Length: 468
Ligand SMILES: [Zn+2]
Image (cartoon, rainbow, N blue to C red; front, side, top):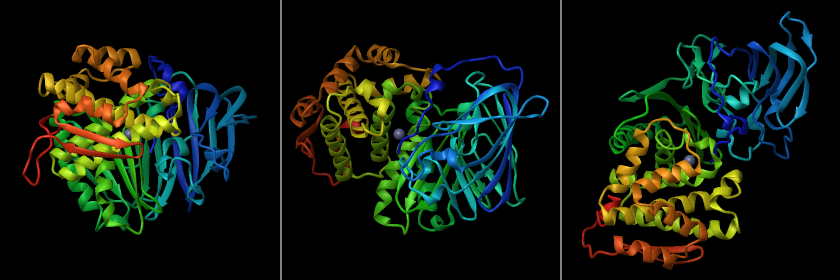
C-alpha cells in the first residue's frame, strides 16, 4: 500500500541531456529468467536496485540478480562488489553491465506486497522497474533511458514508457524505476480522456468478474476527476491487475497496480472501488509532490478524502457507506495518534509503513475539516483550491510551499486545521468543527459514529452539500 521513493531522487538534479543516459536490453532466455544488459553514455561506478529486506531475503531484490558483470569503455571486465542494501560499487568507471534476473519473487512474501516488487501471472510477468533494472549514477537522473525487450512475438509490453511493441523510452531514472510494467502474452485495454491515456492489463482469472467492473469504474472516474480538476494530466499511464492471496494496491510515478485476493470474494467490490479511486486520484495528486516525505499526509490523506467524495458523487457509495467511510477516517486518526505516539505529521512520512494510520487518517481529517469550514464560508471553495493546485502544473512542493499555497487559498485556515489535527483531535472536538457544516461525529478510540445533521427523509442524497 505504499510506494517507496529513493532518497537520492529528492535532490531533483536537473541536467541538460545531450544524449540518452543509458540503454537497457532485456532478453527472455528461459522461464523465469531474463538476461539484461545496460550501456551507459558516461562511465558509472555505483549501481543499485530496490531494497525491501525480509527475513527470508535479507538482501531483498538484489538476491534475484545473478552474475552481475561490469565492463569498462574498452569492454574489459572490471571487478564489481556488492556492498549491501541493494548497492554495487566499482573502483573504475563502468560503461556496460550484464546480469541475469531470476523472476523468483513470488517465492516469498514482500513487506509492502507483491505489487511493490514482482509477480508472474498468465504466462507472463509483472515487475516494478526497481525490482528488474539495476540502475546507475546519481547524476543525469532526468536523462532519457531506452529500454528494449527481446521476447516472443506474441508478447506485449505494457509500461508507461512503451512506445513500440517491445521497446520504450523512460524519461528519467525515476520513471524507469518507479513504475510497474507487464511483459507477457497479454491483451491490453486503453482508455482516454483528453491527453491522458490509461492502458490496463488484467490477469485472465479476473476476466469475468473484475475486468468489466474495473473498466466501467475507470470509465466513470477519469471524466469525473478531469471535470473536478479542470483538466487531466497529459501523459501515458499504465495499470496492472492480478490475482493474489491477498488484496493490495500501489501507485507509482506513472502507473498503479492492484492485486485482488483470489479466489475472489465479490463482497470486496466496494474495497476495489476504494482502492482504484484512490490510486487513480494519484494521477492528479501526489505524483510530483511525493518526493517530499513531510507532505505524505497531504499526498495520501487528501487523495483518500477526494476519492471518497468522488465515489459518493458518482453513486458508488450510498449514504450509509459514505458515513462509514468518514467514520473510518476519524478512527484512523485516533488509532494513528495512539500508535505513532509523539511523531508529528511532518516527521511521520519518513516511516510511512509504521505511521500508516497517522498519515492516511490525519491527512484525510485535515481535508474533511478544511472542506467543511471553507465550504461553509464559500461553497465550492475547497474544490476550487484543489483545481487551482492542479492547474499550477507539475511543481515540487515541500511542506512550507504547500502550506503557503493552501493558506493563500483559505485565509490561513489550512495551517490552523493542520496544527489542530497534528496535536490530535478527539471525536467530540472533530464534531464541534464539522457540526456547523452538517456532519455529526461521536466516538471513542476505535469506533466512530457519523450522522448527517439535517433532517433528511430521502433514502439517499442526505449528505451535506459540501460532500456532494
Ligand atoms: Zn496512495
